[in-house]
Image 1 (cartoon, rainbow, N blue to C red):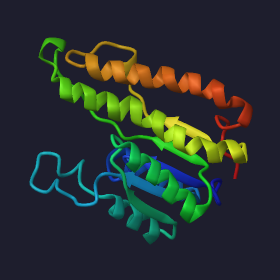
Image 2 (image 1 turned 60 degrees about the vertical axis):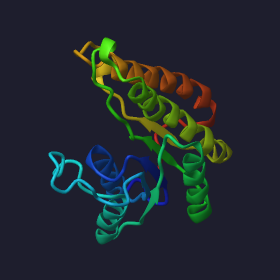
Image 3 (image 1 turned 60 degrees about the horizontal axis):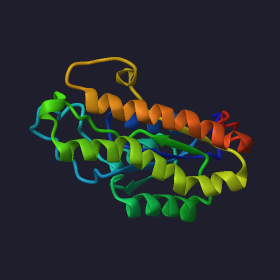
Length: 197
């Protein structure tokens, strides 16, 4: 229980990798804020029903069933006010944020000549802009407590070519560079150091 008394905020926490991260943090004793747009499961009957099934409330209930503390908060990370309210609600309820996991992400798959511009804009909004804004709003409380840990979920696509993935690769490369720079910016406040229980 190395994360007892720590509060962790995870975007994209309703299913898949995000759900696994939420469950793992809770298993180590963290209080988990499960954030995502998904309050209603619409995956039934689709080709994604196995992987994409679930909601923020399902993930929170799984954690609670194992004796942990979790709350689901709806957040569309493309919306600035949603991100701001996610952080405000977390601080109002728990008084602190110790861990931020920027997991929400979307793909942007097409050769450049066929790339849908709206999809590209959404990919950059979710994969690059949203993590930076979540840090912007969460950092004041972390700076004040002079501790914490911030994570982003990246991809090998950031460093290698895959056909039809130039837009996605660009977004993940930008995310990596952003977080490497952010780590240096917050290093004096112990925010990029491992969280201690």
